Length: 532
Image (spheres, one colour):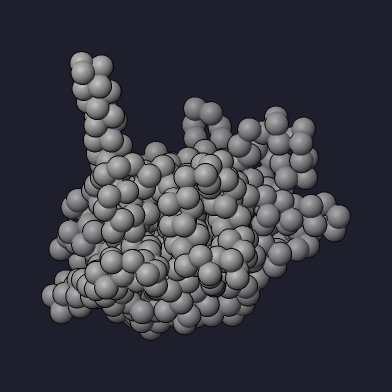
């Protein structure tokens, strides 16, 4: 191993490893790379752990290099947003925002994630792990899991780049998510890579490392096969459609284009209804107005639903009566033209798009970034995963950013959702890889919850996804039309829906237990020495 590290500098190995680990998230057909791409990083970490002269500060720097490159690849699509003229920004201001968004967001994610390298090294240098080198891969995997999970905690974390998303086209390898959640897939990928790294080293543990790597991969695969074999496509059938008007962000917010937008969605809804659709889902803020305070739009959607005898899930704004601020919401319009009483409001707002965190500081440091949003004031975040009870069944909703947070969809199912509808506006991404990456998130949510997902995107990708993560129907980028398919209203519950992120808590407990035992042993040894 020393020869490898001498021939290839650690920073180069980390950079190459980060690039090829992130690449499958962009090109999912390359998912197999993730099962070996972390090996160079593992070799660097294992060598650093054994070399006590390598300080934890240096470990943090190496983690920073890895994760900054990793997330720069993941978030490369920000450059497709240039220019931001639809947000009223000049080309120069757009360039600043795009660079800050891509490299800045990548850096923020890296600054947090790099702590993982420090924790892996610190825990692996304890005696309990030092005497058992085969524990290091499992320590690394557990810490990596916690790092991914931590991204869901606050606004600073954007769980867009989770490792399992690179495996989404090899669905058998992610279907274990229906049992332990997608974090188990992350654990498996990292542990396999570290075990294979040990197998490459000239140590007594190399054979056992290789054996454990193969065994762990096979366990994950076997769980995926078990989920597939045990799946029953039961439940009442409902015909669902997702409308895709292909109205760009610049046009959608233009008041002069409202008539055209209304015509487009009326035609799509009529056509879907004529083809048997019972539920038609519209994309995020298809009508970017307060629907309850706009009589013309209120009557428009009411008459449209009544005329075609279809349930329409319209995404528009609703107003909070107390604060007078707006929510980004999904509203049910029933086949009789009446509005449903239950409204779902987006829970996870997009930083700098729908609200500006630390607004005063951002205004001082990067004024264009504070002005990139389409609205004059911050939106309000929804408070819970409200389920909309339609005539066809109980629908759990998600709006755009919501779909990358697994607990929101879990809560919908726990609240009785039989089907999940996701409305999103991905027109900001043009036809970049971000469209597929975002759609992959919905595929993962379908597997985790065991629910059909109907996804309506303003400019694509719109899709209908089954509970095994297979895309039944799909309409690609920058096209106008709709997808329509039969879906099942599911009442059965996946194991993951029941236990939630217990596996994450087990990883935390595993790491904490090692630290506690280490501290206890040190205190006991010190006490023994003093008594002697």
